[in-house]
Image (cartoon, rainbow, N blue to C red; front, side, top):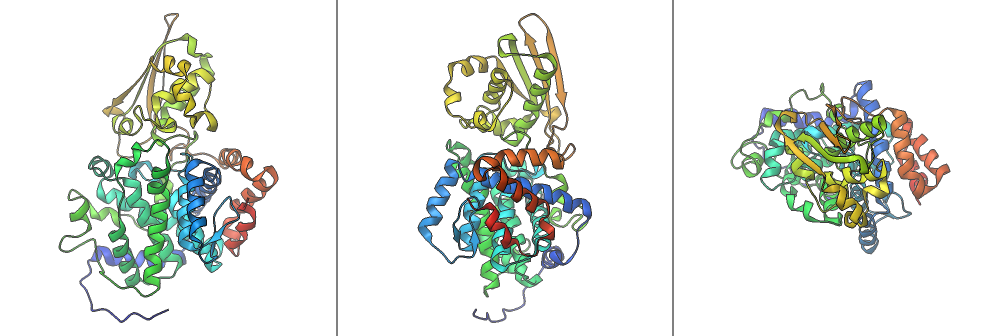
Length: 461
């Protein structure tokens, strides 16, 4: 590769020096055991989401696109036999990850780290034949940088301004992951962050896409692709601005003047953001996890059926309701999904993603009895999955139930066994039961794998 000329020295803030040094050295340091274990569970969850997403409409669109591009055979497209360039693989796998709302999330930052960080990690890891332990450390780093970037921007005001939190944070997370695996030094990391800043994008308008294709791109594929691209450009000799987080008209001046840039380094190397990430029990948008758990608990306890219900009121964090209030996509509409659960007694992957059910007269009739109310008292800075529900029955009884941390949230995390069951349900229909078990076994032992390229024969379908 061409050798770039040494650029002139630039002024670099102490914050950027600390951040870039940490990113450059992250994969050489062993994270705490609990962070490694949590990252392993999130890796399993993300790969399962990618495999199931490869068979959804956004996945089909991504496959057709990368097939048309060709590319050097460097990394695999999960759930297929396609081997393509690092960037194409990161793009497709990222879109797969957010194709059907089964991916993980980091509620405090409103991001979905796994769906962009893991594709970037696997793409570079496969290309370079890296060991699983190194790749998993890079994934942990990616969650940290993804979340911290958005926390520094103040995620909810940022979202309300028209930007989309995940698209920004996940791109920086993917870049950090890829840059660490490419062994960029601290100065190269600073260049990489500058190139990532130039590509930063993502608009709230993605929620208008009823087919989820643009949303899967903006929330999964684009950040994975752009973050990996920024790292590769610098690895191939690109130089640039050394500190986009300080100085005249910097990153924060451009995107969020009411920001707290110290969030980028506060507790760095001590407080691991993967420990505040959450895994969805239900294959639907994160803010709906609380309402569905409460209703599921009430159905189990009282044997409620749709015909018994006079009215249902779900009180939930007001800012989270904005994201899932009467949406046109079935898997991110809280009123629709509560109606479906009342009728069916539960929610499956198929029912959560059925556009036909949104037009079903029976669902529409039940939906008229359902009200979702935003309650500021339930909103907190951690954005826990909360809900307080009241159901008035036709026999005059009034039932109440609540959760302050729904199953899957970081305070009430899924166990290994629960994640195994969820992942198997997503992977099995695509790969078959035997190969699904083999892949899951390999993923649970990912950090013992000497070359992550060995996963390719297990996930290819």
